[in-house]
Length: 236
Image (cartoon, rainbow, N blue to C red; front, side, top):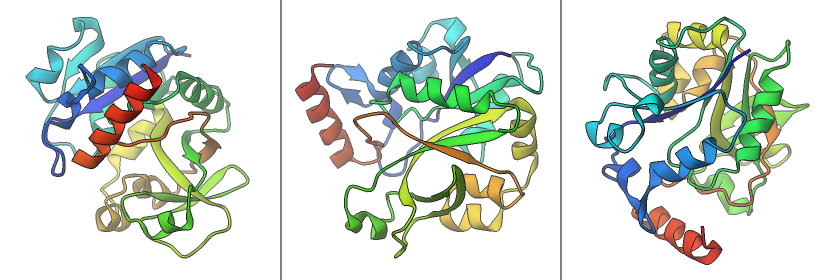
């Protein structure tokens, strides 16, 4: 069973132009994520991008050019791994390039989970920091019961079994192929959350709690400022 990490990185970003290239201290954001994934049990790590600027940051064995026309990061991941030559039970991790402080242990834990025979797709969650986050549409919420993701929300008034979703996905290769074969679902397009494509087509998403101490998805200038402050404080 091969274990693959793909970091999808498109150059266009509405809220933070050329986001993967923006600096945290003196290093591009995507490089922080990439370096974390190299510390995992993955057999292969690749950045999948549509940008020559991003492509040129990495060793040629660890980066691949992909189309600029994908509906989601997972569609980009599928294009990347289709060139590797995988079996249906090999496992693929979609790690977001705007999560600079991801703990490599989170990735290893997801690999352990997705390697189980009965698990076909899996993701991570973390605790709510405050009830205000329930109404913050920039923070995606996840409803978890007995280790299964039952629903996702931009905004909700629910409190029980609600957590913050961490946008990392693990797939068996067979499930990944099915995922990208489906037309983007109504809920995926409405909420701009690709995980609805799985739920709306009957794919079970297992979920485990993140062990990372810092959870920061960088989407805005303010997020980037926070990331620089965190990096400086922790002497990364």
